[in-house]
Image: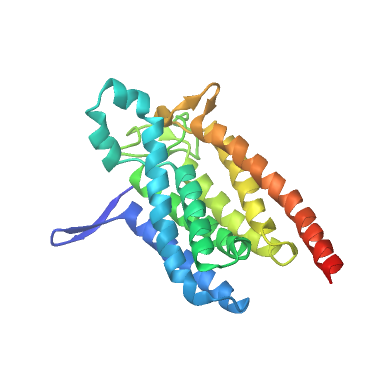
Length: 263
């Protein structure tokens, strides 16, 4: 793969950064379009996107540093390189959602409605991001037999082992993310309670991530007992998604019943 795509003078366009930018812009336009269709206050989408991206970036970096904490404490010199390189997707998801919730509270915007509108777009952005991972060589899979037809080989990667056949977990992740986006868009036409579409995102992504972690080859991301850090987080994210999926309709009915009784 090739992460340095081309250069214009001193400026180099990196594949990973380009795919992240494409993902963020695509997500922004999708959320804005869907907010307009639902006659929501779509002018708030741009600042929401900016704050969520910043919160997601910070969250992904903090979680990455936490996974490297034992190594950093043993060798503080690693802090410099850890700040420069490395992110954990779950940190970005948690940071982005938390920032969006704070923004909605401050602007008195319905968080659950925008949460539903945004998460299919987030899944799409992740699909582009994983293409960036492929170009950079990060988030690589386990080693395969050289004769295995699905293996990919990096020759000049700063992250993945070079000249070794690897499972293309980046491609698998990207396909799953794009599929998640389309499934969520389809479910948005069927699920009526605010927050249920976003709940399905949490469930689908966490299950896919939990399984795919068994096939990842970059073990530097830390472990919690028998599970990788991402698998451990996936268990809680899936549980939260299930609670929201089945709990939000119950709360909505109770609120509706209370409103009718007050009338």
